[in-house]
Image (cartoon, rainbow, N blue to C red; front, side, top):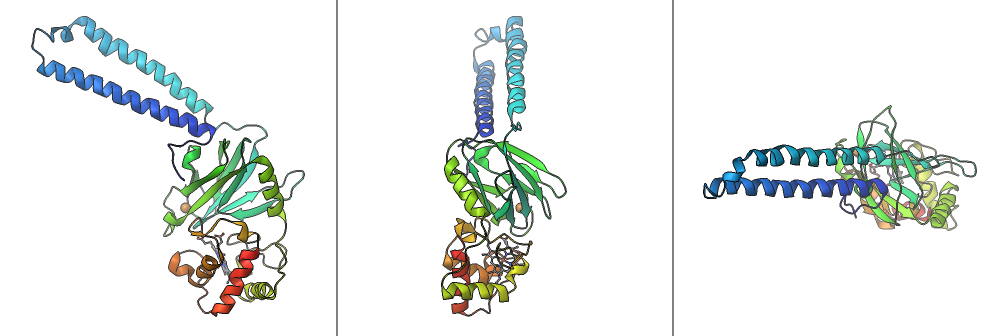
Length: 307
Ligand SMILES: [Cu+2]
């Protein structure tokens, strides 16, 4: 679900009402003025004489716009003042736009270690969130329509977006600034969880990867090592420590792969590994077309087991 007309957080609500009031108000005034114009053209001269009155001019041409505009201006300024306000105690999360995916980092706090994930921004409902965004390559733009404003991700600069999710749910976010071939395939999920669920998720994500417990999964891990996947991907707890691509430590727990492109399951994982340049041409990962079907299944099975 992705809609600016279904606000799910504080700012989005305010911006939504500003849009509604401006649009409806604008339409009403447009209809009024058009009505008067038609009346002035078509009404009999004796009947429309009042239109030329001094009083009509003062009321319609002076008083009306002054009253309307001096109400709208403070309203608009108040919305602006109340929008994107940093809240003390907000949960900090960092996101980095990459061609063509999203790196998401949860910094350490007193109790928890930091960890990274990809293409999923998981937040607790009811708690203010402060997302700092930047980019690793070109300018991207971070936009979750249900949560209000979009914000540019600019290399070498940190921008912030503050919001609070009001109800649990999954909301789609997109890159809103053309950033290369696969710009249109650069999406992510904002997943708003109840606070307790969020805590459980966070504890799980901070853990190192699960040890494979089946021969086929052990084989999958071996293929991952031999294929050099670890030069671009981290799997915490193994020797794979590449920083270029998404952190795969808990890739099996994610809803989608490829920045929101495919549902996450063993079939799509295998398809991704063998054909990434076919299904997301220009993505910065090579296709591994020469793996046998059996190896591909073992490798995809291993990734899928990384919950
Ligand atoms: Cu982008």
